[in-house]
Amino acid sequence: MSQDPWLQNYDATCRLAQEIAENIHERNRQQRTGGNPAKINMTLRASLQKLKQNIGQLRESLLRASSSRRIMQSEADRRQNLVDDLVTRDKQLNATFKGEVTESDPSRSTLMAGAGVRGTANPWLIDEPEETRGLGFGEIKQQQQRIIEVQDAGLEALANVIGRQKLMGQEIGKELDEQNEIIDDLAHLVDKTDDRVRGETRRVKLVETKSASCGMQVVIVLLLIAIVVIAAWPT
Image (cartoon, rainbow, N blue to C red):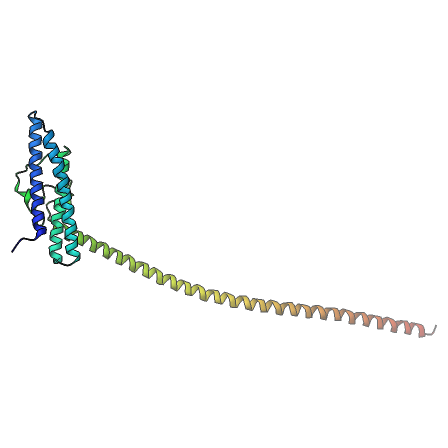
């Protein structure tokens, strides 16, 4: 049975990366010995461009195969790890070509090792964090998954707190509504009491006016009686 075309392209891309590493080593040797590396530099630039294109093609074909479910999810994840490893190789090779990092020995067997091997350190990683150094891609994914789970738990706890605060706010709102109703009732009673006080005040003033009028009438009658008595009194 023939090999999967994607795996064939992957193997060819790995061989290209190995060839680029060897050419960089040769270029640096020529520079140290006073040779002219112009020709090999041209070859390296073309090879690095080809490597980038091959990686892009691998990524696109993997995406199509995964979307159409022509391969299982576990195999898609494994191949994605292989592509990720090639991307880091490409970055390392470009940096070595530009002289930004010290070249690695191209004869190292780990250069051609698959990225999906569990627990195998990747010599092509640049500035790898201490917490992921020496871990395989599967272990790094598990670590990231645990971090996501912790974050999800924190978000869930925060959501519970916000839910309780919302319930408390609703209860406070109901209490305020009841207090407002009581205040409205008190205001209504105060208005009625004020109207009654005003009515009683008017009645008191009316009684006072009538009482003053009756007193004047009694005085006048008494004066008239006194005048009549004086007039009839014999001298």
